Image (cartoon, rainbow, N blue to C red):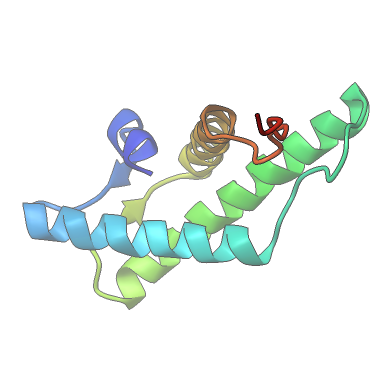
Length: 117
């Protein structure tokens, strides 16, 4: 969220530090909640074509979340504003790539058991 907000000129997070913190908290909360409810991804190894479809669906999901955030920003009193369809799509792409990078850096949980000596 911070990466997309810092890189794209069409995203305004607020003027002061408190406004930026509140906008990021609202944005992070919405993204965390929606991505936990709606999981888009393979459950096993898949080929390139289904993987590309999952990636496109993930970018679409994140773009729709940014669109929701641009609406919620005015409704909740947060200073979060997202201007333009292109900015929304690019923010979704940046968010999906950063989620993918973070998931590659975290342990997968499928560790082999070590024999006990």
